[in-house]
Length: 216
Ligand code: PGA
Image (cartoon, rainbow, N blue to C red; front, side, top):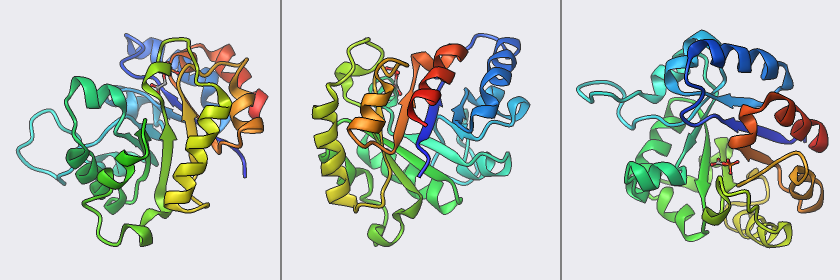
């Protein structure tokens, strides 16, 4: 299968004009591009960085999974370590979000940095073993996110094997954390990951396109 490459733009870029410019350069790559919410409709991007667990109502500032689906979004990142840290998202909250996203027909990219999180993050989903065909897991070790210190591929591969042992061999597992065009191949071609979740390097179009060329 073709590797799944996901661009997590985080809270970047600073203006819609820059977002359009960046998007135009990478949109033909087939990657999942996850811009901030406010740029989603202008770009018609296929990925988002979060969603809320309720369908609608008095939840100031929140965006529902249905709203994303309605805009044509296909994938949503949930459980990112920056949301766990800055928004204090717990496994219980993440689990509710996963349930809502899968229920709305979105594909979920669940970020974890340890295996024990998977079970907790799926706690709200009854019979989750039957419902995880739209679930992808991204292994993102905390020390590797945004630090330039990528995880040694052999160590990451052990986590990939453990995730597949837990969720089954068909669950795609991505690697994320300081991915660049130099190391991308080590994760996909050597360690056998099903794709990559790319943060910082996804904001540099030439570098991002090189990552894709090096793994496809
Ligand atoms: P990074 O971020 O590629 O900048 O390390 C990855 C992520 O947080 O998803």
